Length: 107
Image (cartoon, rainbow, N blue to C red; front, side, top):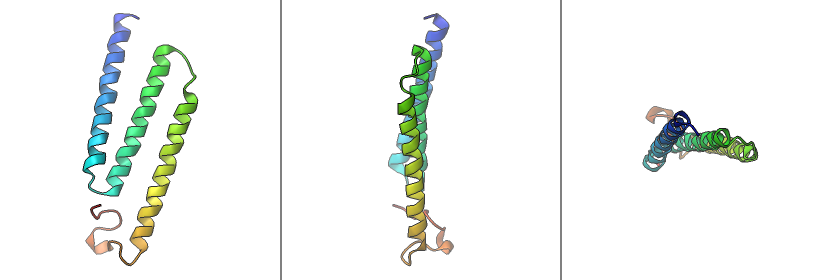
């Protein structure tokens, strides 16, 4: 590896680590379920980016099925949470539009 490649890998690793840390903070702090869901999508996308960067650095394509599984998990989780929030907003005990709408109450 050349010095340029090493610097690029270290820079990418620092960027990926910073993004993952910010997403984890948002997952922990919330405050709503939608905030947590968006942060988990960002975290899964960051994981896909890390796997893709590893494929580029090592020059292989063996982890493409892993990337597809991560993407499918992210999509299905987003759909599930969106349906849950919609259903919760339609119930009589859900939050009313006057108080901020669906998904804005604290979890």
